[in-house]
Amino acid sequence: MAITFQHKLIFAAQLIAGCVIPACVAAQPRTPNMPAPPPMRFVSRADRSQLDAVRDPKSRLRSTIKLAEDRLARAENFTTQKAYDEASVEVGCYLGLIGDLRLYIGALEHDKGSTRDLYRHMEMAVRPHIPRLAVMRRSTPASYSINIKDAEDYIKDTRAEALDSFYGHSVLREPPPEKTATPGPPKEGPEGLKRP
Image 1 (tube, rainbow, N blue to C red):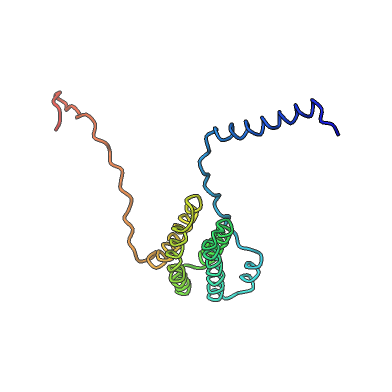
Image 2 (cartoon, rainbow, N blue to C red):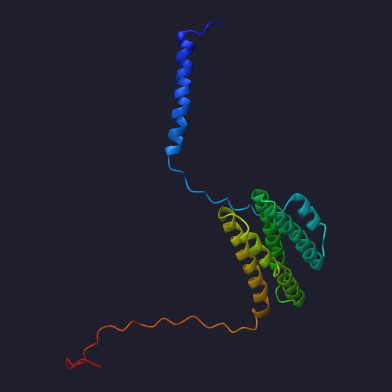
């Protein structure tokens, strides 16, 4: 097979393109690293079926906390393996379970002592999760650590909600400030004198 002039031209064009295009790409400014998308908060079907089988509120709380701790442990393992996308999925499942528990307890009657006990147990269960999330956040890249910080804030809000359930009826709220009329220019009296 003879190499023709056309083949030589095509080869030369490919050689030039192979040298010029990478140089052009290298000259373009790089875009900053985009943050990772936030994890989707959801409860998996397997977890949902396991939770729906439990009817007792205390058992439901224990089951949910156990499932959430398992998800958090998986997220920690993925973080140590530097599999940040998988860790993000597990954090999303963890937050979904905690959010589901908040909704479940929030739908119960608040005046009952048993509901306050559930809130107390929930607060004690999620309290140790905050330092675990902080350790994960420190060992993840900046693009993923934003999502872990949001998870920490969500758990702090969960604790605050649980603690507020104890003080909802016993704390006196300060009434909102009354609106006062803004002082205008002094009014003149009947004799044309200004009143103080």
